[in-house]
Image (cartoon, rainbow, N blue to C red; front, side):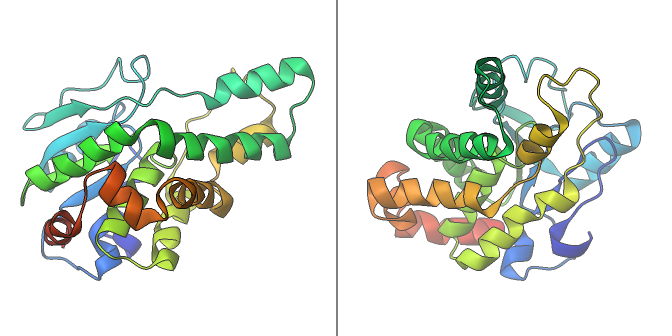
Length: 241
């Protein structure tokens, strides 16, 4: 395991063990992990994945995105879809002549707010799957492991008492560890693609702002929207440590 919980997994990127946030270090096995998609794991990647002992894989991608999800021996796959909307919005803006880096960033900020408001059931289910896995390892991912997964990871880390600055630090690590595959058919200009491929503090801040506006803050969102109260938060801390 490398710096900040980073795990090298050939064929996948942005793979991290969230235990680093609590100062947990090897030799204990990774318990709660986040990553980009696992569709292109090499033979070596699959071997290493098997060594991690992951029992549950939670896929946050939309139905079409997840159509080629691999069967990974020894794991239970849970599909909790959040359908992607960003590219379609950007294409519509481009057609209307209003697309810019600033407008793309506003789309990302709005999308993060929508994750929080429109997908409470998904995040509640994810957190309860982590709880029900007990001491088995759980990995959750989306396509890039940075947006849908980024919000999910922020909620997990908030629930276990991580400091806001540390949660943001983990979130921004996607800019180091996510390696997008080359694309020859981009439907948006390269500068726009860059704006949506990199994470920005304002994106995650928008998610937390939505929690504050609707539930008085992240603690209220966890308890009243997701059903994660003090007892569940204590159990999550044990699960991740």
